Amino acid sequence: MRFSRNKLAWCITGAGHHLFESIEVMEELATRGFDITVFISQAGLEVIRMYGLEKRLRAIADGGYYRELVTPSDGASCSKAGRLSMGRYIALVASPTTANTVAKVVNGIADTPPTIAIAQALKGGVPVFVVPTDAEPEYETETPHVVDRDLCQAHRCGECRPSKSCPTGAFEILEGLGHIDLSKCIGCSLCLRECPFGAVKFRVKVRARSSPVDLENVRRLSSMKGVVLLRRPREVLQEVEKLLTTLPSSKGFMELTCR
Image (cartoon, rainbow, N blue to C red; front, top):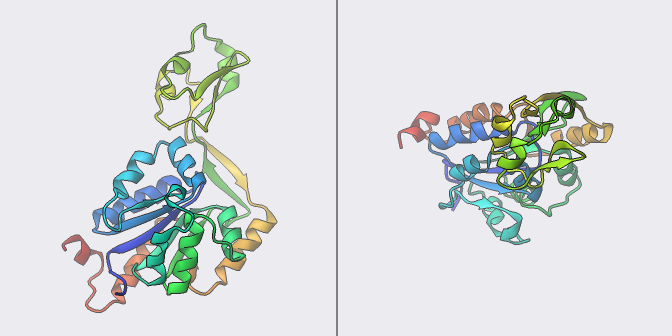
């Protein structure tokens, strides 16, 4: 059996950059009739949770056939990635793709669900579309929930409402000021709503830099056969449409939507 035109594999690694847009594109593809198998790293799981996106991800990968969420806990062999070596997906998308994952792929290392899936896709001739986080020397990204400690210091509340309301204990008081332990955070935004002085922030725009070695690895990735680099997750929609129009009797997205 070869590929099915409505099946996509999607890899998520541990980055907040491009994460919201990636989820939005996945949701749009799902509404258009695509079954999406998600291969996610441990870091990807942690970041999805701290940005409050786990529920949305699990609605896409709801456990149905070819709609599984494949995690490290499913076993080191990542057996479902074998479908890619048999060419059963129209494409594999990796977005967001961290510098760590890019470095592993260009050096032939496959030890996480995303890197194993990419390796198997390349073996099976499945097109691989990658949205790397470190494609430019500088870029703008967004933070998870953080505390503005200067603002917190200015008010010094007698009782910290965010700390009282946090369901996981992620919001702590350290040295008299609020602090969020992101390893415990589930991105519920209760702290954001509870702080009367706006000291809790979410999705703050910040500038980040790529290292020279990360940029070089992205360049090496771009030269690999079967890999196409994209700048934004939304470009995936155009690439999938192009693939569909090359298939026999294809009418693009509309055919899937009306199936």
